Each structure stands twice: as structure tokens, then as C-alpha cells.
Amino acid sequence: MTRHYTEISTPFKIVKRLQLSVQRRVKALLENLRFDKRSRLEKLLAQLSSDDARTRWEAAEILGYYRDQSVVEALIKALGDPHPFVRWQAGESLAQHKDARTVTLLKEALSSRNIHRRSEAAEVLSKLGDKEVTSDLCKALDSRNAQVRCSAAEALGRLADPTALPALIQALSDNDPQVRRSAAQAIGAIGSREAVPALLTALGDRSAPVRASAAAALGKIPESKAASALQHLLHDPDPGVRWHAVRALSIIGNEEVLSALASLLHDETEVFGSLISEAARQAIRSIEQRQKDQARRERLRVS
Image (cartoon, rainbow, N blue to C red; front, side, top):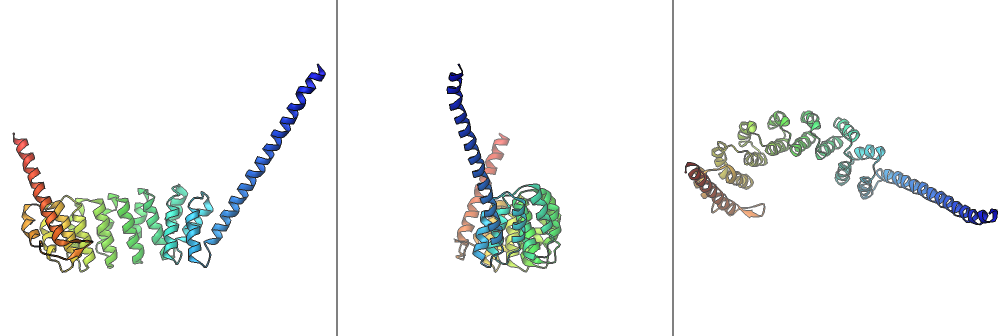
């Protein structure tokens, strides 16, 4: 019996020893892998301070796959990098970190002395899609720096939070045309009738891009009374303004604007890869079809 037990237990002990040996090796391998990962991470973090912009850019891209607090802090710092590609990539990588701590650090970055960092932080916050940052972005519209104000307006447009409307309407009076333009675009993204009076005023802005953006915004708001104001822009000296006015009228216009649109059927100016005359032709067709559909619905309702 003893011999039989020994014959059985000996192989068992050998297998057990082999299992323990394998476990130790796996543990050692995992420890090495963790060490290599940490070593790689430290190297990437160091590369963010490289003199070579391409090296910093590539490091910022790879760091987006690491979930480590030190990475978030380093990437937020990289938002202030002197090279725009590095700043952009740092923002893209940060947008993959949607935890509360990242949002908190980005909010703090809105007050950074580094203009680039403040501007990029606003953009990243909007990409995270958290509307709780709307109030912080509205405050950024009061920044002394036009680039920060512009980025804040663009960010608010991506969030499309109606609570930002009062601040954006006020930004339509900003002394910087880029900020006014971004504010008009953001208002268009929100699409509220409350902003129509301010947008109508912006149609007379001295800056052509602002007039164009205001026209485009009105085209996203179902308010027919804006159609008459947009007609005046059909003969604006800037072709981009005329094009946006045509596009807006194709959406909110009625039969009263058809003759005004017809006056552009010979405007062969090319904008955004298409002729204004063709845009006017398409707008006329859209309005006529809309009128036919409305008349058909009315007949069905009466019958």
C-alpha cells in the first residue's frame, strides 16, 4: 500500500512543482511586462518635452491609449505646445479620457495663462459632450483673448446647449469678427427663434463672413419673417454671402422670394465648388415643391 501511494504521490509532487514553477514564471513575466509598460510610458511622457515637434506629436497620439492620471496631466500641459499639430493631437487624445477628473483638469485649464492651452481646453470639453461645462465655456466668452473667445463659441456650438444662447447672442457684438462669426454659427447649431432678432442685425455686419454665418444660421431656424431680410443679401458684394443667403432661402423661403432668386440665375460665380446660379435654381425648385406639398396637404385636410 505504501509503495502504491509513493508511486502515485511522486508524479503528483512533480506536477505540483511544475505548476508552481510555471506560476512563478508567469508572475515574473507579468511583472516584467508591467515594468516595460511603465518604462514605455515614462519614455513617452519624456518625449512630450522633445525639441522635435514630430516626436511630441507622435507621443501625444500614443498616450491616448494609456489610462493613467499622469498622462492626462501631461496631455493637458501639451495643449499649450507651440506647434498646432501637437496641440491638436493632445486634444484628440484627451477626448478619449471621459472621466470626471479629466473634465475637472480641463476646466482648470480654461484659466491657464497659456492662451493655446485655454483655447484647446475649450475645444476638448465640447468634444467630451458634457453640457455641465456650458457655464464654464460661457465665462470663457469674456476672455480678454480673442482666440479663447472664438474657441469657446465654437465649443458651445458643438454642445448646442440652449442655455448658452444669451451669452452667444451677446458675443454677436464682440469686437473681433472671428468671434462674431463663431457665435453666429453656434446659434445656428442651437436653432432657437429667440436668436432671430440678433441674427437679423448680424446680417448687416461689416464683416462678410459674419453676414454669411448669420444667413446660414437663419436657414436652420424655421422663422419665415427672416426671408425678406435674406433677400437683401442676394445682391451682397461678397459671393459667399450671396451663396449662403440662397441656401437659407431654399429652406425657409416662400413664393414671395422666387423672383429675387430668379435674378441670380445668371450669376456664374463659383462658391464652394458650385455656381451661385445653380444654387438659386435648386432653391427655386425646393420652394416650389414645398408650396405644392403644402397645397396638397391643405386639400387633404379640407376634404
